[in-house]
Length: 177
Image: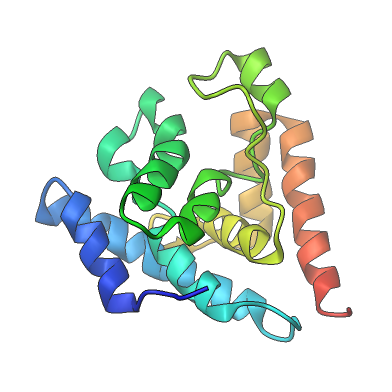
């Protein structure tokens, strides 16, 4: 799999950004996610670090189309569409499944989310690392894990916070493989 450079990834973000202010907000966020993801990847064998490095920069490209608010839930799916259209589909699944610990088909049905009816769950090690790194970053600042869990508990309930906790355990366990 051929990867694009960081510079090319940032140019792609800029291409879809409505203005400089929004571009800077998203860029600061994705750079913080990238830093956290690469730190989390340390000591885990067999990872595609370039996939993590570039995928973490591009994971929120769909935000430029949805903005914040109720449409925001679609930013992962829209990001995947943009990345495929741009010929960099190798990063699409990172964008599509990075929200929280993933979104299950049953979550979509139960919560009547405006998403295609399928699972959007991180499956590869790289997808899990980028998704979890994103959970740690509030804006462009890293929060302690307790705060991450607190946020998910408050916003999405206990079961979802438990899924985030399980994903962290799984990532921690990768270091021992």
